[in-house]
Amino acid sequence: MNFGKSFTYIFEDPDWFSKLWKPVLIGLIPILGQLVLQGYMLNVTRNVVRGDQRPLYEMDFGEDLRVGFRMFLVQLVYSLPFALLYSILSAILTPMAVRGLESGSGIAVGGLIGQLLITLLSLLVSVVFFFVFPVISANVAVKGTFRAGFEFKELFEMVKSNFAAWLMVLGGSLIAGIIAPAGVILFFIGVIATSAYAGLMVAHLRGQAYRESTNTVQAQQPYYPGY
Image (tube, rainbow, N blue to C red; front, top):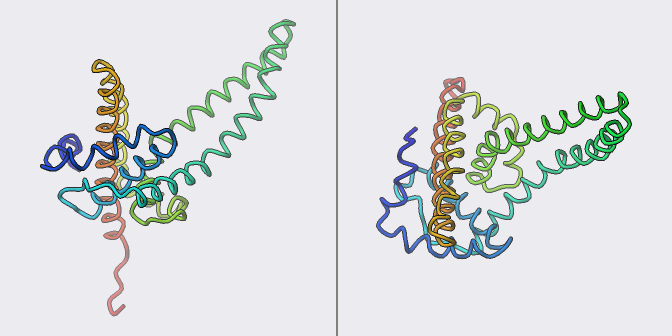
């Protein structure tokens, strides 16, 4: 993988500004705009996987909205079990901890253990989001289907075949998390610009990781002469 390329590819395109100003500004629209911007970034990932030298493209509102909404549905399905479990644990264990602390009884211990479980669940959700979701989103971007978000065998094979590449994506995501809010020093417009840049950086990284992972998986498939 070319980690540094994810930082520079945007400005290597001579038309980068004309290609990006529309999706970035539309991204300011609550909900709808965010779906369009997410779709645009997923399509950039798709272009990287395809090997496009200039993966940025002229925004297609309808297509980007469809892609972004499809990914939103995938994220919703994954988040529902965690949200449900979190709500159940919070509803049961938080009052228990409060009553135990007020009475000084041993119930507090159980409540505190419950709070620890809730914290661990939150940590698990964070791990899934930051490490697993780039793999899932790249697969959805490339295959263009809702089902692609749940091809667990294929997703696992990609991670297993090139674990280091997806770790690099995770590292890039962490760097992006630092870059995104850095634009606050330039006020509102600065935050918009740095957030878009950070998202596009991660989009390129996950495209590289997906391409390398799928190539590795294909290379590991057995060869049967005559078929």
